[in-house]
Length: 292
Image 1 (cartoon, rainbow, N blue to C red):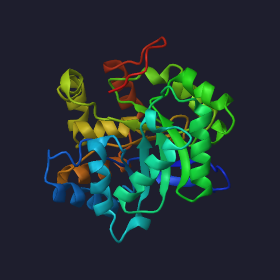
Image 2: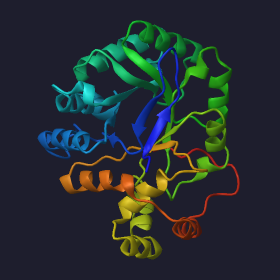
Image 3: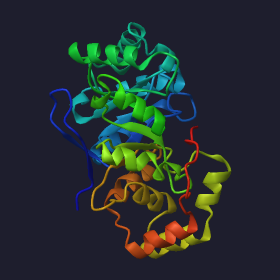
């Protein structure tokens, strides 16, 4: 069973296949867990094939990038490394400075993918110019965006160089399916994969609603898996025979890292997908993009 997602060839780079489940780092480096445990979790994930690691200059004011850098000491080539730039740092010169600062914290000389964290006031033309300069200097291989809705993706596509966008990273999980109405179909038409952050929902009421849902717990029990594994398998499910969503859950506990990796091989039948759809249906109209 193919459990990978392909990023299209861009800017002279060949297409690349990535695991449909990677590793997120939001809230790492902030003292919520021992830093050594966070480093070990990322290394365990790499060992299990979760080779995509996503971080950002925003996370812990750069401390998450330092955790990632420690995890990658001596094994940088094992990872597909993603980081993100603040929108106010995405200018012609400021994006280059921000990227260089991220590289220093990460202890590497290049990123595999660099994302605009969310749309801001700096013109896209400036951001793309900076990204292209970073590519030319070998500091990033690919670029993309995050938290962009349909209109913003269309604007990006109309902007010179925007057609080289590799991914759009947005919030997506079973309880937040708004992107399925317009954004996901548009991205599929343009061969732009989706990176799903918070695929297990981010705290609060909705997470409790998902994890405590009787139907989800029954299905997970019947399959012999956990509810988080069920949610991950749903997020990365093939559509029309093709996977184009990468989920990036964060995990620190060894058991959770293992469960995330095991979810890669979990296949959901049409019957189960129908039951999940009935429990948490997608909206039948355009809704505002969910952001946390």
